[in-house]
Image 1: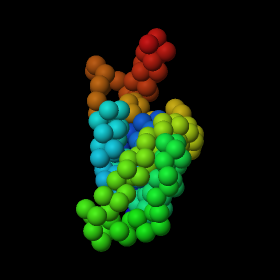
Image 2: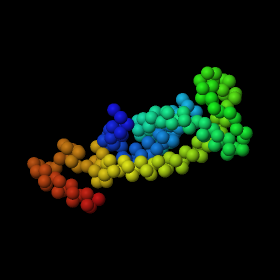
Image 3: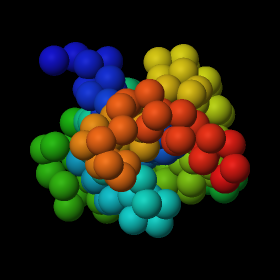
Image 4: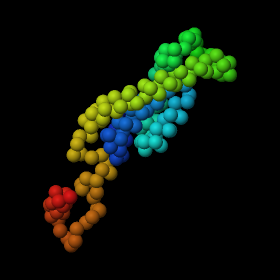
Length: 183
């Protein structure tokens, strides 16, 4: 099952395109947190802060793993420039963290903090931009007026709210349509 199938499953489960687009946007931006292996920390934080769709956010977060590794050094370099710090040779930084974590923290700890600062500045702007783009795309998947399952459309709530007596379906539909206009 590909990512597009999982997105369609989430949309059909009742998650609105707006909520899912925000969840996915945070999944991308938190998924490139510049400390590989710790992307779940900012993801969980935003899930709770913004009441996001956890499965949608986590799926996208995990899909970002290759991009996460590729963006560590650019974030570190950007952070060093922001802070006016002398650049540290970070060419093998990820490999050094894998070899000896303590030695790598001693060597690159400040640079990693600078990378986290650059990421924190990047986060709101990139998340907003991604949210706006994804919202448009997801709304095309679930057009307006056709809510996802559980969205409350009368034809999706079969068996609930049956009218009095043995009226036929046409009378019920007419009554519901009239009541919607008055709401």
